[in-house]
Image 1: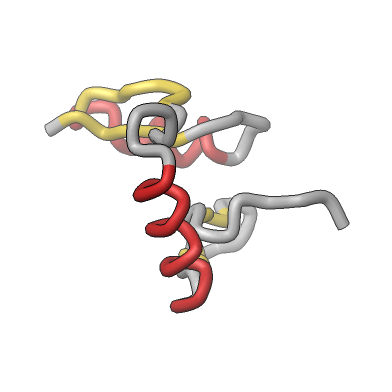
Image 2 (image 1 turned 180 degrees about the vertical axis):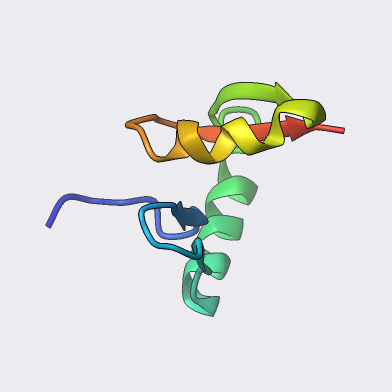
Length: 74
């Protein structure tokens, strides 16, 4: 199985009701150790930013292949 970022929150949009997968507590602690050890180089990768008015389009975008976080700007 390929390595996956364990703390990444994923939204599965192919289901009728999207499901959010939350991280485990140990993955959360591992993430904090990584950030503490490398604070200048450890940061999220933002794939794109959608304005709030286009929030519905985010679900279409997430159903496609993308890398990084998708942000909805308020």
